Length: 244
Image 1 (cartoon, rainbow, N blue to C red):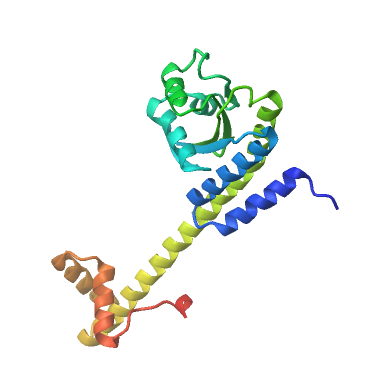
Image 2 (image 1 turned 90 degrees about the horizontal axis):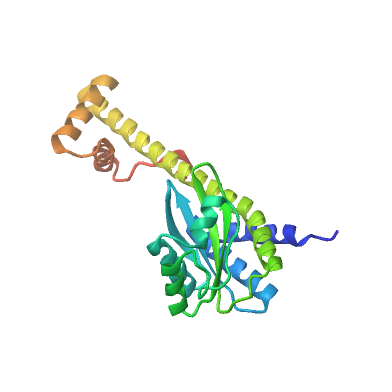
């Protein structure tokens, strides 16, 4: 069975998700793939930065090179440019020539100083409160043709689902970490309650009251007090069953 270029790209992006440890690392890898894709298509070295917009604020979160990150950050500093505009209109925005385009003179002057003559912003609609965009940079004009813009938009459409998956994976891992920490905390407190009950021949509620008073008096977290008690009695840190 023949695999379409879009399906092949999605498989590569899924492998990238598995092989990276964070969303930021994934977006950095994504920018490298995007830059390589357009560089092959144009026969020109294209660099790519990734901008993330969350709660009405934009920030550079990755890039195919250090220079790409720097170029992307210029747009964040100035507060205007094709990438930011692409996020507003949710469509690709082309800056064909930084020397003649009248829209963003301050930004364009900065790009010209860096030897970048054209740029392209392509949005990635992620959710109601977060969007991202690929910011492509070229050292010459005439690079971002209609076909190139369409290819960049096609890449973004495929990448969108992979970015959403990466965010969901990171969110799930964070939730699992929070659940693990909560269970460990509860285990320590329950064990400490049992120790206090045995030492004072009291009920569980009375033991909990004792722990809370000690926590308040020492100005320490209840979990820390509980772990200290368990360590003194057993010589070991409290563990939950899934640590075994």
